[in-house]
Length: 118
Length: 149
Image 1: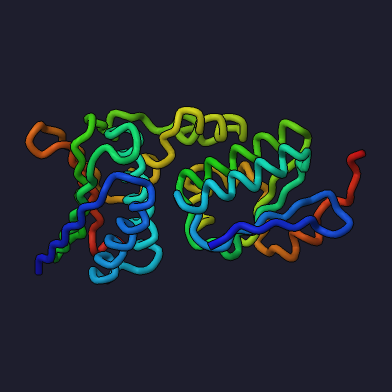
Image 2: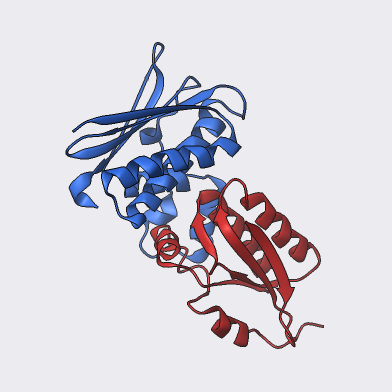
C-alpha cells in the first residue's frame, strides 16, 4: 500500500498514484502528498486510482478537499483509472459530476495541459 | 441455517480493517458477490468511524462489538458500542445529494457537515435500525437480503 507522485513530462501536471485501499491507513498519506504539492503551488493534479481497490468517505473527503484547493487557485484535480466499484461510489454521492474522470490513465496523461503558468 | 460470529475490538481506527475483513469473510460464506462484499465492508467501515468519532468522541475510549448472523433469508450485521447514543436515522441526508441538479460547489461543500458515510449505509443496506439502552448500549443493525444481491 503506497502513494507515489511524479511530474508529467513537458507539462505542469503532477500525477499522484494510490496503490491499495484508501481507508484510515492510507488516507492520511494521500492527504499529506496532495497538500504538499498544493502548498508548493502545484495546482494541476491527476490522481491515478487504477491500483486503488477501495475507498471510504474519508478518501472521498481527502480528494474533494484537494479539488477545492486546486480549483480555488485556477487549477484542476482530475482522476483516472477508477474500477467499477469506485465509479459506483463516486456516482452515489454525485462526485462523478464534480471531477473530470478519465477511464484510461494513459489517455489522461496524454491530455495533460502544456505548461502555461509563469 | 443460522450461523453467528462475534468479534470485539478496541475502538480505534487501525482496527477498522480487521472489522471489514471479519464481515467480508462472513459475507463470502453467505455467497454474496464481490461487489456486495465491497458494499458491506464500506458500511461497516463507515459505521465504525461514526462510533469512534461520534459515540466515543475519540479513539481508545471503548470497544466495538461486531456480530453477524447468517440465516436462510438475510445477512444481519450488528455493531454495538457503549458510547453516547448516536442515531443515524436522526441525521438527514446531505442536502445537495438529495437535489438532482446540485452544482459542484453544493456537492462538495456538503463535506463540511459530513453525512457521506451514513448516505452509503442507507443506500447500500436493505434495512438499517438503531437502538440504544443502558444495558446493551448502542446497537446499529444493518440487514442485507440474500436474494437481493
